Image (cartoon, rainbow, N blue to C red; front, side, top):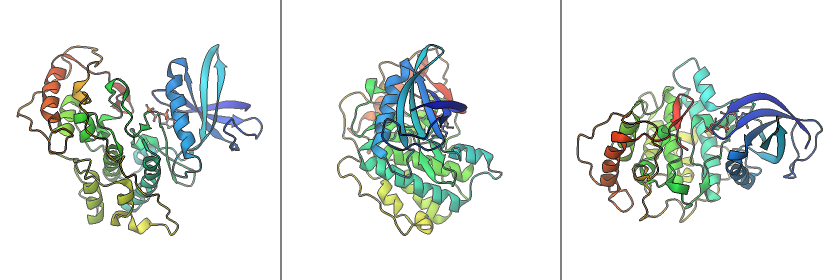
Amino acid sequence: MDWVRGETLGRGSFGTVNLAIPRVKTSASSGTSTPQLMAVKSCCASNFASLINEKSILDEFRDCPEIIQCYGDSYSYDNGEKLYNVFLEYASGGSLSDKLKNSSDRGLPEIQISNYTKGILRGLNRIHKKGFVHCDMKLQNILLSQDGAVKIADFGLAKRIGQASIGFELRGTPLYMSPEMVAGGNQGTPADIWAVGCLVAEMATGAPVWRSTDMAALLMKIGIGDEVPEIPANFSAEGKDFLGKCFIKDPTRRWTAKMLLDHPFLASCQDEDDDIPPPLKDAQVEGPSTSPRSAFDFPDWTSQQSSSLTFSITSTAESSSWFPGGSGSKFGAERVRELVSDQQPDWSVSDDWVTIR
Ligand SMILES: Nc1ncnc2c1ncn2[C@@H]1O[C@H](COP(=O)(O)OP(=O)(O)OP(=O)(O)O)[C@@H](O)[C@H]1O
């Protein structure tokens, strides 16, 4: 496809996103007819594998209205550097994160939140049904079309359900991380639901669910403590109950996308033509693992500087009953103690917070 690179729309950890204008209306390599305006995500050689993986997952979701569409790919040269380009549906409405930042009030109206949430859950249900976990659900990754419809984007961290994370990788953004992910490195479909709860609460208050800037203390709170994110006081009873279902610490008891789509919180925006695929049977939660999978169990944290995180554990952590294998919390607590005393993980800053890759 012959195309021209337009203005920069944004930058992520793996590449840059620009407008792409096809010179002649034609078909990209996927065979899908291309629109007049697209977004193009481009990366250099070191990130080819990651973007190729993202494209291959997006290809599984052709014609899913709540998921950003992929129109094909190409290689190009820019100042002698080889780039891999993936052509995407252009979401001209920006992200939900932008929408929240631009709102004059603190938070969005509840009816708007429930409408967005319904679109998100419909998309997520399709993702889970196909056997994938998104692994990076956050407001920045929920884009909006010109008419305000939700488009789930950024599958750069997505994986197949049950697929082991390479090198015990800790994926996602700490603010949205589920307890089982922090404590056990267990990132199945329930982890996406926890993240949905976080972003719904964030839309309601205009602020992230966790306020802590002490990363180690935050991970400890999420992974080991009984605390769950605060439920917005200004939410309706249905909204509060909905969030309660997302914030069930035990991932085997947490509601699925399919279940949440039937929750009364979304009743007022239920469409006539709902066609929700059935949930996965066996794949909702990955089984217990004897391998070290905890966030605190990394053999390979990148140590950048010493003793920069200050944190103390004041009580003896109990094993969490929901944790697969039952002994992860104690181990996690010990690991945090080691971690904060002389190591700092490789936190890369993204949009006022950190994303772990
Ligand atoms: N299809 C699209 N249409 C319009 N804008 C887009 C599109 N895809 C991405 N963008 C913009 O480009 C930015 C970068 O997107 P990208 O998916 O690379 O990374 P990110 O989600 O922001 O960051 P990270 O990959 O680090 O999580 C987004 O925040 C968004 O503003």
